[in-house]
Amino acid sequence: MQKYSRVLVKISGEALAGDEGKGFCHKMVTKVVKQLVQLINSEMEVAVVIGGGNFWRGRSSGDMDRTKADQIGMLATVMNAIYVADVCRSEGIGAVVQTPFTVGSMTELFSKDKALEYMKQNKIVFFAGGTGHPFFSTDTGAVLRGCEVEADVLLFAKNVDGIYDSDPKLNPNAKKFERISCQEVLDKNLKAIDAPAAALCMEQKLPIIMFDLDTPDGIHRVAMGEKMGTKIYVD
Image 1 (cartoon, rainbow, N blue to C red):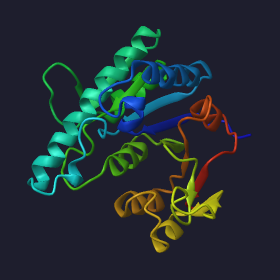
Image 2: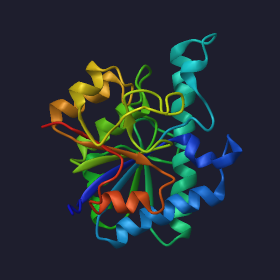
Image 3: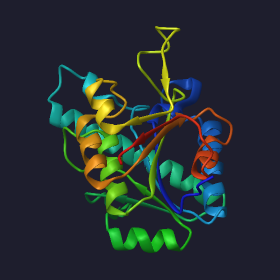
């Protein structure tokens, strides 16, 4: 099995809410954090991006200016990162939140050099606030930061166990892909990742593994090289 050295984990905001649907489920957050701690204990360098869907779904706010809606979404990701980073500290692991814009004294401005320095110190670095600009998803923000810190792989923890040729909730005969190229994801319009994120992955040769967050110890197992979910390859 291929163990990765530096990973960026992307977690959906909805996952933090658990069965509550909104806000935080502390039990779920702690479960996720314990897996991140496992990565540190396995001598990996770890960065994390969290979506904001447990507070805000900007794209569904059709009656609101898109720029303002996306700005609210960016702030939702900052709240999530601050919360999860604090849980990391309570579990004995240092954590830092970096954002592309100033948030008072609550976060640090993004710096590749500082982020790499923190990771080498066995701290988890949370990249919040997306790209800092509207019209870009947190998936794109995750890919951007993954490229900047030269991650070996992006680990996208979702609420489904991989990529299918159709919605498995609607089609019981949906076919799951174990491996699929970034270009195929776009050509087949599978909506696993958006076009800007896919294009950047292809350009920078950065692979993605999509898997189910509910899989026991899934984050740690995938990072250690166990085959699960779907690998989006770029070679």
